[in-house]
Each structure stands twice: as C-alpha cells, then as structure tokens.
Length: 415
Image (cartoon, rainbow, N blue to C red; front, side, top):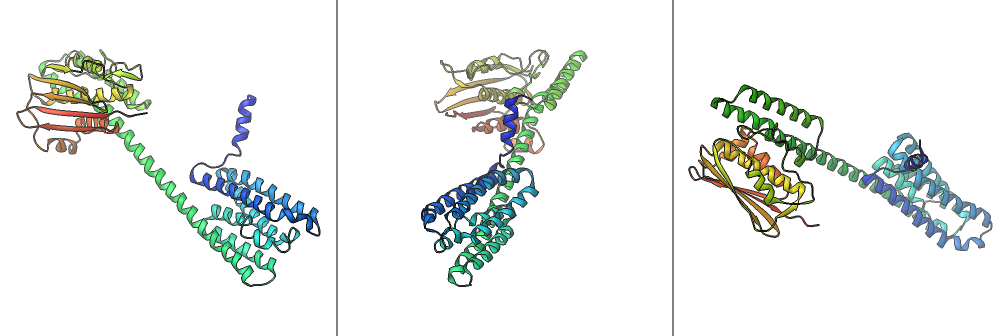
C-alpha cells in the first residue's frame, strides 16, 4: 500500500463519529480544555506555596494527559468499538473521581471549590453521552460520593457539588439522547424522501419511454404499423429499461429518445438534445423539439421565442424540455386528429415560462385528478414532478372543445 494511503488510513482511525454524536464529543473535548486551563490558572499559580510542588506538577500533568487521551480515543471508540468506549467512559469517571479525591495536593483550600464543578464534571458528561440519562446519573452519583469523601462531611459545601453532578449528568444524558433520536428520525425522513424521489424518477423515465412506446403501438397498430417496426421499438425499449434499472443516473440524463410518431423512436433518436454547456439556450432546444415528428394526429407544432437567447443551466433546461415533451405527448394522445400545438417561450428575468397550447378537444374539469388516480403519469409525474423539483409551477387550463393550455414557470436560481 502506498505510504500516503497508509497515513490517511492511520489518521482515520482516530476520527470520531459524524453528526450530532460527533459534535457532542467535540464539545466535551473543548470543555476539558477550557476547564483544565481554568484550573491551572486559578490553582496552579499558587502551586509553589504548597507543601509538595512536585506532586502538584504530577497531578496537573495527569489531568492534561488524560484530557488528551479522552479527547482523542473516546470519540474514535464511539464510532467503532462500543466495548472500548464503555471501558474508556468508566475509566474517565474513575479518573475524575481520583482527581477530586487528590485535589488537596495542589490546594487544600481552593481546589475543592474550583475543580468539582468544572474539570471533574467531564467524567459525568462522558458517561451521559455514552449512557444517556441513566449513564449520566450514575456518573454523577459516583462523583457525588467522591465529593463527600473529599470534604469529609455532609454539609452545604459538599451537597452543592454533589447535586450539580447528579442533575447535570441526568440532564445532559437526556438532552443528548433526545438530540440523537431526533437526528435518527430526520435521517429516516430524508431516506424516505430520497426513496420517493428515486421512485418518481424511475416512474418518469418508464412513462417517457416504455409507456410511450406501448401507447404508440396501441394507436398506430390499427393504422397498419409494420410488425418489424413494432419489434424494433420493443427491443430498443427493453434495452433502455435494462439500462435504467442497472445504472441509476440523474433524471435529465435518463430521457431516452422516445417514439412519438410513425417512423420515429429510440432507434432513430437517443436522448434529448445534447446539453454540453452549463448555460444553454432553451429556445433552440424547444425549436429542435418542435421539429421532431410527433404523431399522425398532430398537424404541426409552432414555436415562438424571444429574439435573444434564453439561457438556463443545462440540467434545468433538460428537465424543462422533458416536461414540454411530455405535454406534447399528451397533445398527440388526447387532442384529437388534426390538432395543432404552439410553444410560447417567455423570459421575465427572474423566471422563464413555457406555454404549451393546443386547439384540440380540450380537457374536462377534474380530468387531471382522475387521470392521476388511475395511474396515468403524464401530467402528474412527467410534467408536474419535473417542474416542481426545479422550484417552479404548472398551471393547466382548458375546457371541452376549446383546447388546452399548460403553463410551465421555472424560477431562475441564483448563485
């Protein structure tokens, strides 16, 4: 193994957990550092006045070394070995109790007030992070007993830190457990949303490929579509479907060219117009889309665009073109024989609007909702879903006998 990779692997062994748990361990490491420095400043400055300064130096050295050990090993053990973590936490509580019991070597008068409420509380907090409410309370009870032993009596000066140990351990344990449960719940919600998004992506691609081929065959077979053409379309869509299931890709890359009329299909055209640059002219893409033969039932598709390029990021433009294509497929399927379609592209600066209008049979009130409930995915997934994912809006209007208008509005994303 190369030395560089070996060093990277070695450094990863001490890496703590991610997310909330990692943040809690890092916060505890900062707490140890700050309270240790505070103890050194407030108590260590008078170390020379004690009876045994050398013992005090050893005491402070042990405090610093143990802080470093726990700050490095405990988070790493938390993410890998639960038994090692438990052993370190138990040792941490015992070391903190021992530090409390031997605090007289640095200051018989002052240390009992400074250290119990500060550095030694880190053992309670590590027990709380590892064991939740029960672990924090157990660590607090251990340090409370050490506090009573240190003072040699049960009075106000020993009860106050003891109560703080127990309460802080239980509260920190409860709060950390609550934060971890909230993080897990959020992760489950995000995973569910990701799964729903993936299912919708697959539904769009299946609708825009396989289902369109089946719809085409159902319409055109009665008009005498040759059997070899049917076989070719079926083979092409079988290949496209296998690729879709085998290799998940971004939605705008999954738009396999679909047959939308006689003499067209995946064998003739693979994918949407190429989008090689981060900024592409949506008007040119729509003009190219309109030139694609759609069906014997649609007489023409006319495009009206501004006199200047309408630039969108390539991925966004690909999704808009796919949504417009799905809307035109609906025109071919439902507008009736001889219907014409118009594409109007408008650039408002902050948003881009594409209107797909036809002069066909129109749409009855409630028909969109009925189609969605019947499992028809054209508008619900291929149009609404795509534009919604871009942060846009879709408005469909129409009346029986008066044609249909589908307005797709996409806001430009800044940054």
